Image (cartoon, rainbow over all chains, first blue to last red; front, side):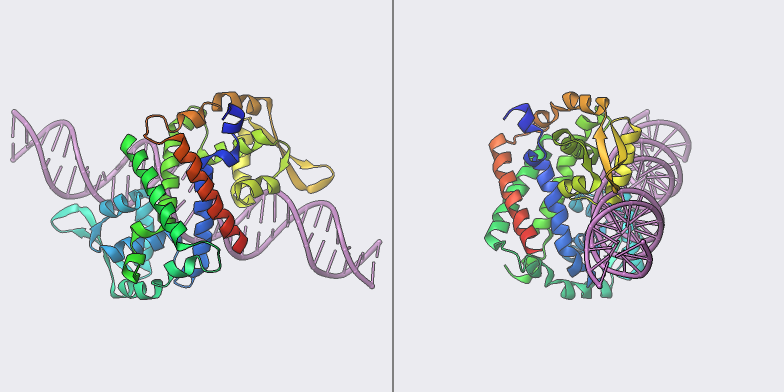
Length: 146
Length: 146
DNA sequence: GGACAATAAATTTTATACAATTTAATCAAT
DNA sequence: ATTGATTAAATTGTATAAAATTTATTGTCC
């Protein structure tokens, strides 16, 4: 591919990812609105539903987000009554996030989201599975290098 | 896959895309910093280098961004001397974006970016090409449905 | 040609992202 | 035990995103 071709917007892998990521987020929006959640709040809860009682640091490692993003987001979820934020008594530097009863219960209401997401589209589950594997493989190669 | 598995963060295609998109943006950051550009500013210029003299509406259709995002971004690029913003005389509702001499010249400096991006990683060009095709296919299926 | 719908940008508001700095707590080494 | 380095969150500042509203202009229909 020559320089001309290499610089076309439609030939950028980055743009494909960037645009597709936002399009998928748009698919989520109406489903998550029923739960009163944004997309970032949703993946934060997905992580907490898997493992509760984690520090901001641990949560950030899973979501690839830092405290600059997480602090206001967790404060918001706290104000919604879905979780609590408290310093770790054994090391006051750590802030421990815990789901409330209400936060745990929201999991049931959210459980239909993954299956509903691609309803009405021609996207096959097998395609999603294969694509996810490839994306994760790409990401690990990027992370190995940096 | 059962409900338990379906809700794991690592099984979400959305999260793979979302995280990978941000990781690729991080690869760009040092390269684009040399040009004084952010990632969104860069893809906006990629589009303008392909086709100049476009309205905000047209640009937004290509980048999948609306005026709420583009207006401040274009004002910033204008203040950097890379483009001009002027109302279309034949239809004052349209604002026409035009690259300046400086904006056109930046293309030369940016031409090495696509090749340098995955330098130092184990990512093969063939892998990128195949993956981009699949992502674009997924996106068109999503867009057909909505 | 005047009322009204439609269109395009801009603006407002809320919520991310992330680099850089600050603050507070803990660890390390003497 | 005190100084200095390290660590974890929070804060600050800049730049996106996107829904909703506003403003200005143009098209439409009678």
